[in-house]
Image 1 (cartoon, rainbow, N blue to C red):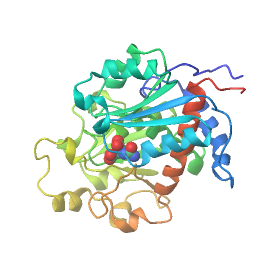
Image 2 (image 1 turned 120 degrees about the vertical axis):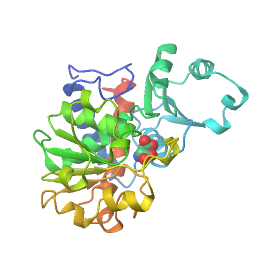
Image 3 (image 1 turned 90 degrees about the vertical axis):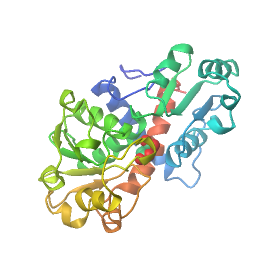
Length: 311
Ligand code: NCD
């Protein structure tokens, strides 16, 4: 038994967890990643536990990796998508959660367009709630898988400089990354056009750059964000071509960074817009490793929150 325990807790953001709690999740994920390399990827650890994924927004990686994580550990995973749930018949989110609890779900993973809705839901039920992305607020398991990927590549994160580039204002990935990275001792820069930087940037523990070359100067890592057009209600930059010319991460732009700079992207990517195809595919791109680590991190989160230690 470790002293730090997450059993029965929620995972709603990366602003709250301590360095020790983040370390416990990352260490647990690292030990689980061995299971992913086995010919038979199945362990009985979560047998008899049921996990519900409730997604009110599109997802490829996040939903399927929670499902895979649960299944590899023998949990029963029930997937509900917003478009097929009774939300379309007017059922409230509170009644949906009370119903899932009454159906004896042991843990609910939710993605929602509403910032703060996961915190709200966690107050309604006794079972753990995991935030799989709430509006523009946070996406803690993405932040954790990014930390794990960087820790694998660099060892210690203490003193690294990470530039988060692009549509920061609408990105829950950026927020979870900045809290997790600063908690583990990295320095964070937010880089993008002023219209796509968060209005509260001056209250965040970051440096802000509105020029790509200046923002990439000497950095160890570049984390590129997708332009979240679905969350932009008005034009925040002139044209896609102009955006890509000024803020697209290309080999040329990367010349400002350290020669061994690492490139990350949470996906889904718009190649040729926020990132050039050759940068996405270059050997120092960690993008595919991020996806694999996503499964290991979600296995660790389910395991720790469901209190399966020692079973
Ligand atoms: C992100 C999301 O949905 O927040 N995707 C993901 O989970 N990997 C980022 C995005 O949609 O751009």
